[in-house]
Image (cartoon, rainbow, N blue to C red):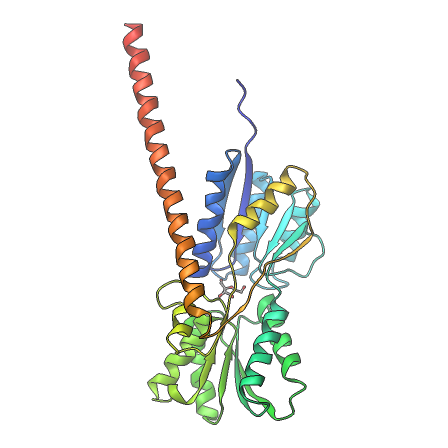
Length: 325
Ligand code: FRU
């Protein structure tokens, strides 16, 4: 009997961190749920040149669909266009590229995230206070959009000022360095708005080194359920707030399958998200950990089935061997 055709999805990740690890795991799980699927992962560790190369390589191998998180807006648009022009469907995921030559987008509305965090902080400050911003990687779309949304949110509050805005890439160490630069200039502010939780944590650590951590309120984005992740930090009162930035690898795979099977799909797919404060951190953490347990069970089950199948196949081979003698 002829085997059904396998679809190969090439995934090009811009970065390597706990958020991407969770996502990659979820994408790989897509293989368990779809017999006809092979998911190939490539990660460029924030390197534009490497990401270009990896995307081009997937195209040359002839993958059936690409999922791409572009490191920066402009850096890999040529490779994205090349893939699209060769007829390979391209899903942009979480970050966008400055080209219209892609099949679909799935991810959060980062402008909205920046805007609602801005509104949250402005309300907490009752319209009067000083904020410092620690930005994600320069030229990467979520950093640009979170910044714009934030600035728009605080515009109607003349009593609120952003007194410093420092770049920190997306990493904890970037947050440490950015906060150190800020603290050298001024220590007179109320809030730190960091574009993700790793940056916010870095900023917190830098303040702590100077014994200043209790002077400021820290906010980030991601709300990971890992140990020391955003949800715990908000629950424990170390962060004032975070913003859920869901990975949702299953929804990415579902969209990819629709495209591959020529079923109708939406071109823009916004994932639902929400602010995390002390009021909902514990509950969100419980739910996220529950989902993780289920995913873990599914993986264990899959391994067991694999083991049974390979035992069964080797027994079958032995039996056939015996019969032949
Ligand atoms: C993970 C990450 C997140 C951030 C997102 C933005 O690689 O840095 O922390 O929210 O990317 O694209």
